[in-house]
Image (tube, rainbow, N blue to C red; front, side, top):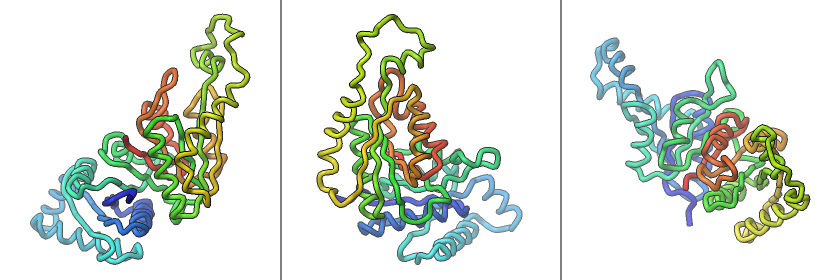
Length: 294
């Protein structure tokens, strides 16, 4: 079964979206999936161009379509490999409508941070991760080319199993290794998260918690990785107070080029994935991010 059936690549003519287009085509080429490059023209910009250039909307849209086709060709592809489509409206709405029209199941975008916070992903990309009805891959400009190390965040939910399956497919295509990461909070860690206030419960502290979580992670992964014996797959279990910080630290120190995570999962005492944890990881991870929807 194909991982995806139609891929939308969002194009705003920035270097990061060129990398996103290249990644979309790479993903699509392995399984013969159609890729459509979509640029959404802002309505206000279109209105101003009509006044400035004395052209009607049809002529302007045609001109921008030609620009999009040139962008595709300059990115190393033909317009037979990648369809070009211009839409008019708000970028988020236009991209969602394109996904719905084509029955796409993956939206690929460039990260495009701001001048003040270049490490964060752009506003539209963040909104698509939160609200688009499809999986969203946000590609960092520094991550052009095949992924080398993939980190998958596990919380034992069905959605994290789905995320793991996507990570394995991409790893098989790109020749990447996969790190499967689970972060747990012990009773002490959780009490610290609440300001260190806890009753005396020495007897409840379990020094073997690490081993139990490692066993549970291995049992969760075995059915998923059984057919991927050729891949390098590592398992990591970490105890930390702050789950978000633990995941971000691991991503940074492991040299990950892609992190894959489910946007809905089981929550422990307070939070896991999306909630605030996934959103912060998506905003601040120094690598590309694939957000897998339920």
